[in-house]
Image (spheres, rainbow, N blue to C red):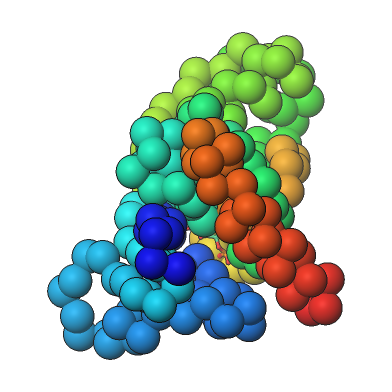
Length: 217
Ligand code: PRP
């Protein structure tokens, strides 16, 4: 194993990284250093397996992978579509399941039917644009926000939003509903295009092992 180079993983910070390490644990990939909650370390290493892990903001994961700073990334499908990087998407990890939806007050439902020029607030302008322009053929004004998207229709910034719905409780608690579904989402594994060739054996084994865990769950 001595001549092996490190395989580097970029994990989307938060729940996604936690779930990923739980799944990796089932195929014998662990990283003790990562268990320490108080650590300020940015890179975690498993010397025996020649693996390195780092945590990044979700939207940055495809960037690290495209440039080869990470061989492999774990990130939501929403981010993969939105970032549109040159990377391979190789596996649906089957967790972090949720939906990208058009949401708003019930009163906005009619506006979607009649192709009116409405304002759409979202953290995902590419996904929103693609949905309204290419699928619905509705001209809309897209307003980019960075979080708490549900606020927009409440305070009158937009008529509807395009956002992720998981349990639906954020919508419910703010008097909003799902008006249309855009697509289903979940966590995915992405791979750098050169790494896929150079480290094919290790990466293929990783995918095969993960597939058997996913099938068994
Ligand atoms: C996401 C999403 C919704 C919420 C959906 O926000 O943007 O606001 O989760 O989850 P629910 O259907 O289970 O209520 P996140 O917590 O990532 O924060 P954000 O507002 O910064 O986007």
